[in-house]
Length: 118
Image (spheres, rainbow, N blue to C red):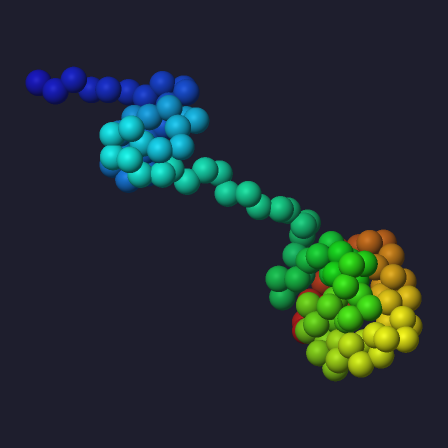
């Protein structure tokens, strides 16, 4: 009868052919298919009911707030255009910095209540 092979703690199954390979293997030695590694995702905290992140909005406000990127992200297109039109005055950048601080200090529930419906 066939010999049953079990994988060890430092082994995994190939995503293509199912052969037992080392966990750190990038390419399967049997079939030559590149193995997909663990996906690199960034956790930006809890999301609002519409899928928007408070931390992402804060980062947009800090880095691109003068252009209204955080407003576009939050679905407030009209305000985003207003920020974009007046970006040359640096007033939107100043307001966006204040909004950056507000987003960081706002609770997740308050963020969801204010921006989750848009």
